[in-house]
Amino acid sequence: MTIEAIGNKILDETSSAETLSGAINAFVRICSTATGITPDTSFDAWAEDSLLDSGVAINPQAAAHCALDYQRTVVFIRGVYAALIDLCDRFPNTTLEILYAGCGPYGTLLLPLLAKFAPQELRVNLLDTHQESLDSVAQLVSRFGLSAYSINLIQGDACHYQHPEKLHLVVAETLQKALEQEPQFAVTANLAPQLLPAGVFIPQEIEVDLCLADLATEQSMFTEGQQSNTNTLKEPVRRYRIATLVTLSPEQAPAQLRLASLNAVTKKLELAPQVVSVPADVDFNGLDAALFTRISVFGEYCLNDYEAQITLPLKCHALMPLVEGAGYRVSYQLGSYPMFNFEPVRSI
Picture 1 (cartoon, rainbow, N blue to C red):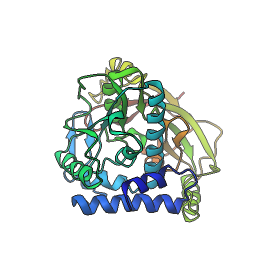
Picture 2: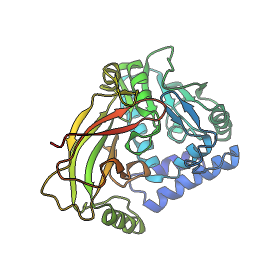
Picture 3: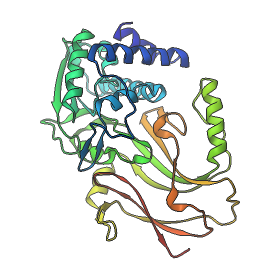
Picture 4: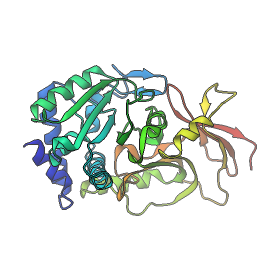
């Protein structure tokens, strides 16, 4: 299957789940064979990960594995394509300056789309911490016959990288659920100000909610949905939203970072904290505290609960066992391992 055929299947809104997963699998198979970089979970071992000052940059094999999360990959590729079409309208007769931060070894979110555009329409900059990933992408550019396109490979840390000119599009998908571990916040805060005024940052928004939920029942429903070729949880069972803990957007992130302060207990920088409490008059039987992540990629293209690995709930053990009225000071903490921090406070 050619890269153009793979891109066409992914962009076809009538493609079945089976067709989409088949296209993604074909893409990964071709990339793996061409580069020798084989998808591997590797998350537990952290083998060859890069420990940055603002988060963990997962190793190329683990990054390759992310492509196999087909609904995540499809939604992001469709969102990137929609953004490119929109930018072509906003900036007619202009070569679009594009930065894809954390491109990984396959350039997954961009390479399948290039054939949709003339080489003179795009100037593509692929940024990754791992030189191995960039060497891999270089092989794929040749393998897919994309050498006519202006593709610049840059080794560097997206949390600090400064592009020499303003950008029309930034694509940065360095995500784990609940914004834990990877440096998505720091990447966004650094790169968003480098956009042109009418430029686009992908993803457009990420929200993390703290909820009480019957995760066992939801997981059962999700598994049944997978068996029927849909990852969407249609009807959550007994879900109580406590608060939105953070909203990450390119418009807000730079200011949020400037206002970050040092936590006296953990000695880490944290975004503005808030105090939350476990609700009263709730039957806690079967409920867990959990963090839910929702991602607006671009326009109509979103990832909601259970639609991808990065939108699966993350159990919040700090609130367990649940105590009615218990209060917590919650903040998103930055640093080498970003995560939410919960500190008990007087019950409220």
